[in-house]
Amino acid sequence: MLYIVTGGSGSGKSEFAENLAVQRYQAKQEKGKLYYVATMYPYDQECLDRIEKHRYMRKDRGFTTKECYLGLNRLKAGRDDVLLLECMSNLLANEMYQQGGGLCIPEANGKEMAWYEERLKESIVQPVLRLAEEVSDLLVVTNEVFSDSILYEPETMRYISLLGKINTLLSNEADQVVEVVCSIPVYVKRQKGEG
Image (cartoon, rainbow, N blue to C red):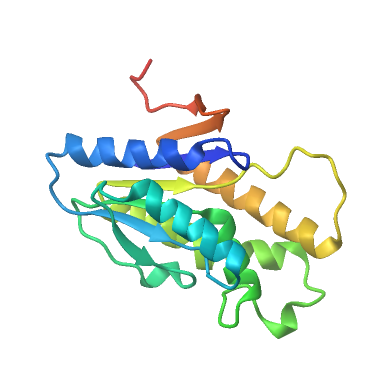
């Protein structure tokens, strides 16, 4: 099953997603493995502090960490595994701005949005959907960054637009979409048969 968990900064989405991943894993009688797919590249002290905070939050919960800053298409897991991908906004930024990223191409300057959208399907959306088919459960944490009504620089607006596109494409395919607001889960989409 594919779960999309979204929310603003500090909303409690990470804790909710971790709890849900552990519940899904335990419901399978702990067959397979429970993976935390870490996408935050540790490029400064603030990132290192956030990484340490997340490690502390999930310690002793049974997660095995797989670091995947780029190239999600290379990530492999087993049929009975439960994966928590944390988080989509970091993965997109890495693919756009790190050398070797699927959207970090010198000739991309001046390209139309349609070009970027096609590339993000290849480098992010299709690999996520493939993983969702291969494993028992895939939980993707993403960010709600679209509601502040501020006009940013064009490059930032492109990033926000692409994150919105990813969230839309994945949510359309997801079994469940949850927005976490003040640590309260608001179910936007539930699997058929759920209340």
